[in-house]
Amino acid sequence: MTLETPRLLLRPWRDQDAADLYALAGDPRVGPAAGWLPHPSPAHSLEIIRTVLGRPGVFALELKETGRPVGSVGLLTAPDANLPLAPGEAELGYWVGVPCWGRGLAPEAARAVLGWGFGPLALSAVWCGWYEGNRQSRRVQEKCGFRWQYTCRGAVCPAGGPPRTEQVFRLTRQEWLAGAGTPASLSGQ
Image 1 (cartoon, helix red, strand yellow):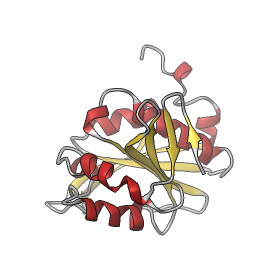
Image 2: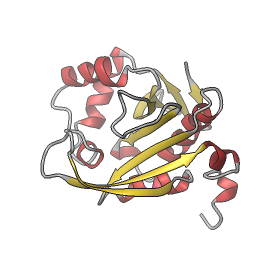
Image 3: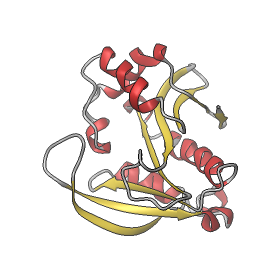
Image 4: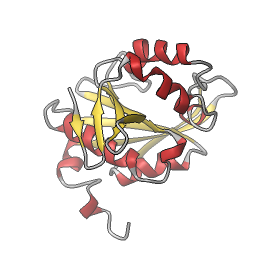
């Protein structure tokens, strides 16, 4: 399955994306902020495509102007999610490589996946978290209409290091249908 936005094609990850994934995910500014370690090699990136990014509901963000992946977005359900979820809920995850930071691609991709989640998948809520210090991720969630729910102190991070503080946000189907996170609802932005 693929989804399309004005600038992106959201499509499944492919084995041949491993070199592009490594070029993006090997940068130490990307993974640790999101909770995972930088990729040490193209072979590792290929393994991540096959074991993590190849899951249903996870998409490569292919930039239409180049035809190459620049990040990832997806909806995970239990047991694959990192947050506790009720039936009919999912967790949103996303990241964009450094060369495309500041272009609004993460909110654009997230809105497309949320439309799919609240539309055809009929989810009741989508959860999303960000580790303190990751202002870019927080901003994406705010732009998409997510609202703060709770703080998790001492969250264990897959990337290792000391436990972190994670802020957890949620967006309900009713909020989405009411226009939360749509460009018209973001006055002054």
